[in-house]
Length: 168
Image 1 (tube, helix red, strand yellow):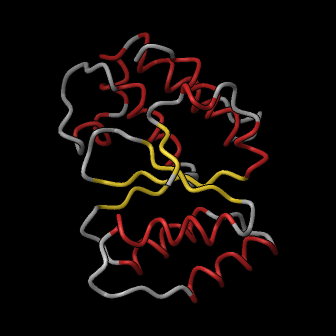
Image 2 (tube, rainbow, N blue to C red):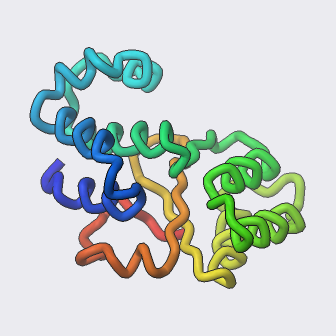
Image 3 (cartoon, helix red, strand yellow):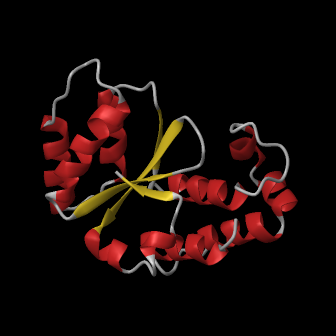
């Protein structure tokens, strides 16, 4: 991982300022990868990682955000309904969040569509509510998905440098 600051910036954007644990976890994965693997062995081993790899800080970001309900990771074989339920689980519990959830639940697609077919439709719907759908590219057959408000996205410095953050 070339620049740990990009990952830290995403954590600061998505999590409240008083939640510094996630940032510490990511720094640990970068500075002391063996210790990170030891402390989070269940999560790391579930990804069949048992040794230091360059992508470990990105994996640490995915794990940290998922534990804090800011990211949902779904397998490419999961149903459209699973994707909708997963995305609804990471939307804020607010009046606007409920409206978005209702709109997502009302969305329909062909039963045979795969994620690459229906994720752009979901993204377009979220965009109507000033929300952006991103996938964190961890070189996997899963979809680690996050939803950022346009305001949150605007707070990221040089978003084009976030090569692992793919707008859907």
